[in-house]
Image 1 (cartoon, helix red, strand yellow):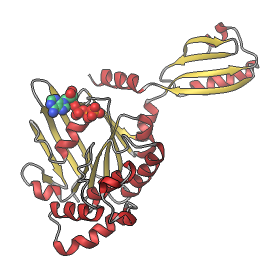
Image 2 (cartoon, protein in one colour; image 1 turned 90 degrees about the vertical axis):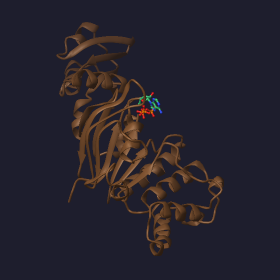
Image 3 (spheres, protein in one colour; image 1 turned 120 degrees about the vertical axis):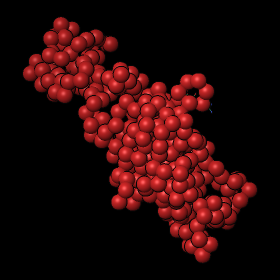
Image 4 (spheres, protein in one colour; image 1 turned 60 degrees about the vertical axis):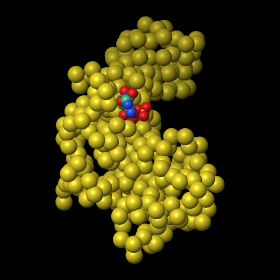
Length: 307
Ligand SMILES: Nc1ncnc2c1ncn2[C@@H]1O[C@H](COP(=O)(O)OP(=O)(O)OP(=O)(O)O)[C@@H](O)[C@H]1O
């Protein structure tokens, strides 16, 4: 079977500056793939091109082996898209809107009714079938957006910041639904929230200033983003010099008389070493919290590394 998504030398510019530059990637498996990047990194541009909403300046996109420029209809049979603002018609009922969306997907007339029912069931909105979309909550509107993206059972579903603007409960529900959907297809999901990518994704693609700066499994990503600092609360704190003498600690400071922050970088065993030293030396640790590097720092590191 051909890969679900293949991108070759993709570049795009809106005006003089390049928004996306020379992106290459291939996705062959199901599951959630995260497209992570800070604001303006080029996520939406890439997704809009993949889904055929925007014509690229250079390069090629293949969906299930079909070139999106040469065979757009065939390629789009296998793409579902949930843009940042879902294209909902608020004066339609849920059923009417999904029927309309199925028509846009050029589905066989005879298959539409059951496809609408199945999509509503999958996304948990069957009980709102006759409700006007304008009368739904944000979370349910998002479910309708997801339902229209899966109605034709595409192999690839692209979701641009799907939890943006939802309240905490709606976010939990939306993530659960995304995981379920990804069991049998590929979901390419963009986010600028690191924890969201952590919770959902099998693989991570990081994009910065229009270029891919990291592309690997979640495990590889986790190994990469080593904790940057540790906050230690101790009953019996040692002098600063003792904290600094732990191998790998680059900086240490006391925030209160019993609370210190230790800084280090990229050392797999450092946390173990700190705790071991603390126990051996009788510092009586009451709390130890690791802080991962800030997302901005990771972007900076990865961008520098890729240059
Ligand atoms: N229609 C447009 N016309 C001109 N420039 C644009 C247009 N859309 C996006 N850009 C620019 O292209 C670059 C990439 O934007 P894009 O929206 O793809 O990033 P993003 O990673 O999706 O960011 P966000 O998370 O803020 O949506 C940015 O510099 C942005 O200002």
